[in-house]
Image 1 (cartoon, protein in one colour):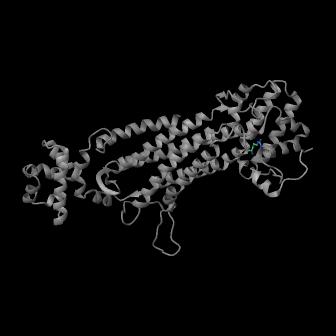
Image 2 (cartoon, helix red, strand yellow):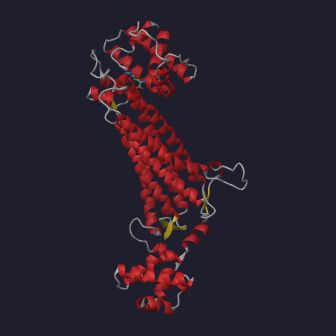
Image 3 (tube, protein in one colour):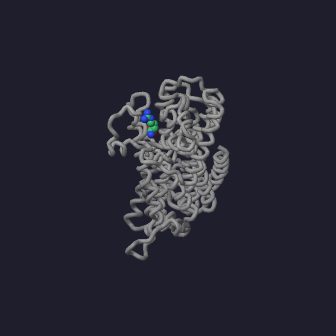
Amino acid sequence: MSRFHEPQHPDFHRLNASIGFDRRLWPQDVAQSRAHARMLGDRGILSGPDTDALLAGLDAVEAELSEDRFAFAPDDEDIHMAIERRLTEIAGPVGGRLHTARSRNDQVVTDLAMYTRERAAETQTAIVVLMAVLLERAEEHLDWPMPGYTHLQRAQPVYLGHHLLAYFWMLARDRSRFAFAERECGRLPLGAGALAGVNFDTDRSQVAHALDFSEVLPNSIDAVSGRDFILDYLGAAATCSTHLSRLGAELVLWSSTEFGFCELPDAWSSGSSIMPQKKNPDAAELLRAKAPRVVGHLAAFHGVLHALPLTYNKDLQEDKEHLFDVVDTLELTLAAATGMIAGVSFDRARMSDAAADEMIAATDVADLLVRLGMPFREAHGVVAGLVRTAVDSGKTLSELTQQELQVNSGLLAAHRSEFEQVLARSSWLESKVSEGGTSLERVREQVELARTALHEGARA
Ligand code: ARG
């Protein structure tokens, strides 16, 4: 029987059905149905034979799904109805007893909490793998000088190891955000029924224990309405993909002929359909371009939840495509970043030549004046004058005559040999001795911290 006289409009059916995308929740749906049926049996809400029949039927349905021979029917609106329909075909009318003391409202959010928890754990593993590769490559290139940039203008030299480790730390924080998201999925919604609880004396703690939730959500209204654990995952993903986009952008720049700092592995590059000489950094470009898509899903799902009255509304079905696309996109881009960083080769000579541009030691010359007693702001002006003299006369700083030095600063002219020492290449890097700076000793210290952080990551 149905309360309706007319069938659904085909376009409404298409609009309403989620089976096209929520079928990936079948493992979670089967697992929770099993735990639910066992609990109903243990509480005497279902008879022993009925419980056994349901469990056997669920095994059969699971086998069809996992072997990819489950026949979806045109009327299956979502994965929950499809599984119940098939269970009833296999086990007979007892299949209809599975939904005792359960609503699709608490069912769907439970599946999602299980799914999101699993993906949040997997994402942490993928991040730790990328962190390990970054650390390894940083150690290999610990003392390779390169220019550091601000405004994409050569600013101060740094070691490549130091630059690579910057990404390591971004990812370490991303990992913590996913660990938080994983914990937020740890409270069981099931048992809330449609919204108010159910008319049976169920044991939610038993179900929580069986499904590895640490506790039950204490409010049935919150349980069926809440999707903030999805926002937490999406938020972590948005930040992580934004980090990957910055890595991608640098790989695109660095692999250009203009920079010539690195060559990307063939396995992560494409050719051109017309220009035979081209090796295009498509994967790095896509790291750059996928981030706004992830951020877009986060913003869109905030929009879905915004001002949404409690409790369940069909709007909530929109959580899935945003979540699933983010999971797929992030997992793929993390794999691409890992592959590119593992295989990229750097050009030591190109990088150190670019870092040998004396102009990037201007701050160091100013600091020499500071050590000789001049206030920094004044020293900044003196060196700016020196740079202008050099640029105007087409010379490097060390090529300036004693006379030209004297015009800009008598103090500097009197300390010509210290001035020349400051301009000797390695000193620009090795003078950055402050904690977290680029001097080799500090970078080595950082490598140790990174090793510790990595192991913490692997344990979590
Ligand atoms: N397919 C639905 C969703 O994804 C399942 C819950 C349906 N609940 C309902 N009251 N119509 O949200």
